[in-house]
Length: 168
Image (cartoon, rainbow, N blue to C red; front, side, top):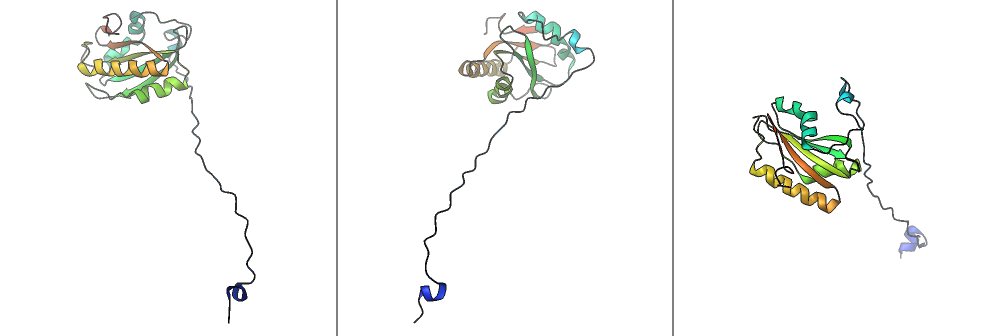
């Protein structure tokens, strides 16, 4: 009568194979872009930004844009710009901003602080209720991450600084 051993031969105990565990590794990519057209004459890495007027003087060109741009200026410990990040490009009167997207790049650039800035294509820099809510959420997220939100500036025909108005 046939048995397993007569069919397949003597049974050997196989050594267990080592298991492989696979992990995904995410590598942060930090890209440096060279901006031409004489940008270094008005956006020098040596300038310390200490007032909303300086931001408006430097980025006032946003008042002429037809779309809303939400920008985070990443600053080092001496309030010098180390990165300019266009967080969101919106429509005529809104852009979607989430803390995750805002602080993802701030962490990559090792920013000590950020200045938030966006334009109102209508020319009226008065903040909407959404602007106030987004600013509150971003300040809370920055506090958790240790990246201080120094100001939020809305650019229109003039500017609105949340710090100057006592909102921050």
